[in-house]
Length: 152
Image (cartoon, rainbow, N blue to C red):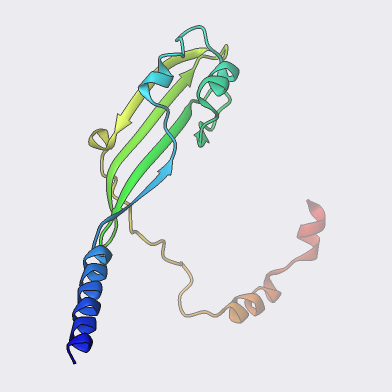
């Protein structure tokens, strides 16, 4: 009987250890941002997109225009049990270029530099109320004038 109790105690202890380990926070990293040491290799006014790509790699996103900047983003998230993930660190490195294609400026932004942007929840209302698609389609049959279409 004492061996049975010993196995139950060791099993309970093992379950306790698993429960404690299951409650530990986990962390996820997303994206890539070059370190300050990597950025020291880039010379403003001298380096181009090609030399920056060789030094620190291509970015995850670029500006919309040909002269737009390169943006490297990196985030670190903390997950704990059933709670929603919380962002604990974010780095954005922005490299802007002149029209000639040389580096104009290098900036690093962190989570503390960010601003909360409120999204608009407005909904565009339809100007057609109470009329189905079929009613709209059938309602246009009498409005068509072939002579007016051919005159154009």
